Length: 341
Ligand code: NAD
Image (cartoon, rainbow, N blue to C red; front, side):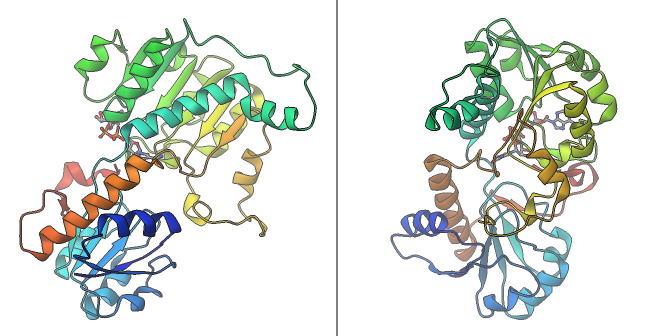
């Protein structure tokens, strides 16, 4: 099938071409993000391949449909950027890659914890400048500390397993209890108890109406003074302005994030020569106890291979009229509440 690949980076091209080495599909790579204005690039392409920041809203879908597109292949799990109802109305099929990197994301969360605790990012710069002072590099032992895991699905469970290996106690909160987490010795509690007793809180739930700004002023007030928050899930789980206040007062001792509520204007691009206009983000970068990465937790060789292989087979399934278990449709009520998963 002829596929227009949007938001292409060098690594996308490398892994997608490897997954398509039999040339089953005719892949044409475009650097721009898919929006209503760039959708015309896909004229004559029956399939379009997109990533998390492409805008597959109603107006974009209408342009795509009017020029012959019949398939949207997401090379990611989340589909909050796709208007599924309009896609269905226009007869456009939508497929995705549901899970590709649970170990990569959990390991990255642990990387943030270790770096923040032992100030490895500061030590790196200091040593390169010949500064071998230990002042302000004091950390704490993870052994014996309590980690609160919010969302104990695939990634949260792996995070729990790794932290258990460090000798941490595990508290957990989820709408469903995962017996594998309980088998590790993890104890499910309500959020106030988790907030009050955790030295580190790591977020691994999807962004939904219920979890939007889960970490807000009230939640922060219930936490242990000086605790650490880690977010590798979705930016809007955190009320960034409330977290900034928590950092200023010292209630939050450390913040490690791989995601940010307004990240679509920033992440995945080299903006080093530009003036960043997002004052909240810029403020966040000024704290010595904040570590931000640009949505890279998933970014492992295994994940890119998995994403590319699954995307190629999803497209082949649809092209050949086979049922595709990665197809997504507009869902009735309960599932529609999941904005990002
Ligand atoms: P998963 O579906 O396996 O687990 C999510 C868990 O969250 C489930 O156990 C679910 O019951 C729970 N949950 C749902 N609603 C909840 C609520 N209101 N409160 C508490 N828990 C709730 O998903 P996963 O594969 O573990 O992924 C977790 C999240 O990681 C995803 O939603 C996504 O946002 C994020 N993610 C980030 C990256 C990255 O690169 N940073 C990559 C992949 C996924």
